[in-house]
Image 1 (cartoon, rainbow, N blue to C red):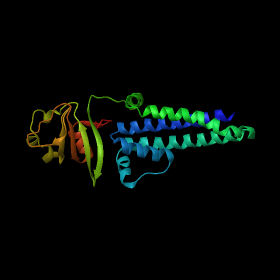
Image 2 (tube, one colour; image 1 turned 45 degrees about the horizontal axis):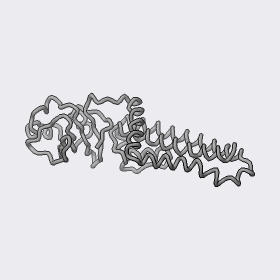
Image 3 (spheres, rainbow, N blue to C red; image 1 turned 30 degrees about the vertical axis):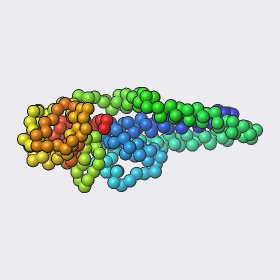
Length: 238
């Protein structure tokens, strides 16, 4: 194997690792995690670096996330071992005469990878790439929009701050002002903000009535939130 092929393999590995990271990030986003936290945790899991104690609560508190975290760690371990072994074999097979072509050999494939990453910074190209990966991830987890979605934003003590997207209105809250819904009294859930489609988020009031497409920022027990709004953990855009 010559130096060009060796660094081409290295460049392809970088690209594949990036794709794997994005794919697992989207899978975790489908379980209700925000994008930045999901990506940080995925990189930590794939590289075996571990992750912060506070944010690990988001993984440990949910059975689906724990299962996905185990898969991510095992995949990262196997992938890393395979790649390290491959590169050891590649570089041991290189002849000393090929080392002189080191710089020319590394510039071409790394330049190609750099161009790909630059293109992925273009909003339309990135949107297309994420769309493809989201479609793949959606097929893996059985994504559907037939139910309301929950996006976990943060933990505060034993309660959570979450974003609920209403694809349909639960029967008990249809056409009823928030003050008469009994939501806070019966479930302990506090609706803090309501974002109507095409409008800015505003504080929820006593006369707030839920509509299809609303995004609600709520505070309360995470399991109770899911039950109250007939929602499941799935990816939702903020």
